[in-house]
Image (tube, rainbow, N blue to C red; front, side, top):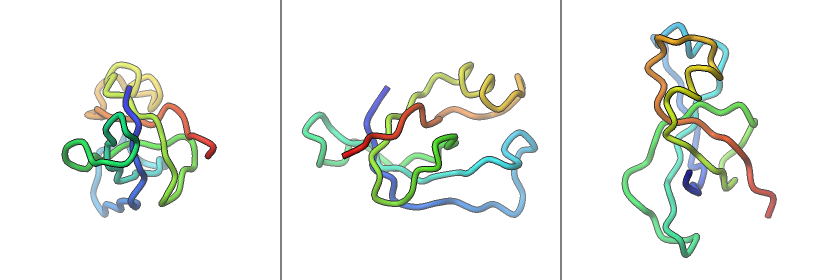
Length: 86
């Protein structure tokens, strides 16, 4: 689990069927200080309706992501598990 800043959304004209109907976000993982970037941006599935500027908690628990999407063959890797209220 890692904190990340939502920097935008992603749109795909062609995507895996398991992503149909799900919002995709681009997030920037944050270091423990809550401000400094920690690595490259990530593409995540969002069940929380987060928007640009929100801070979210993301997980790389792929099996949990596949359960969320309801498809055990989904290529999902990252998903939002919570949105922080600041």
